[in-house]
Length: 73
Image (cartoon, rainbow, N blue to C red; front, top):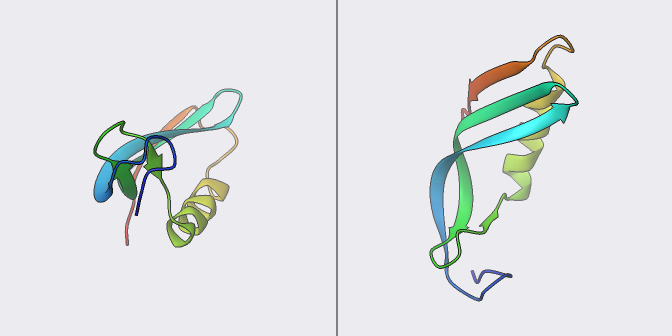
């Protein structure tokens, strides 16, 4: 698959990404599978992974300021 930003090759990698879910809440997902460009580091999250991310983020308490979760397949 080609990068939509620069045309480089996308590679499957696991990375850690932050998600700001509310004004004062950040969740870091570790070992998240993404397609990342070897050239410009742009990344793409595939639909099934994004669905699982959405489910995980919906479960975060409204009082949470920072949470670190491992993405489990």
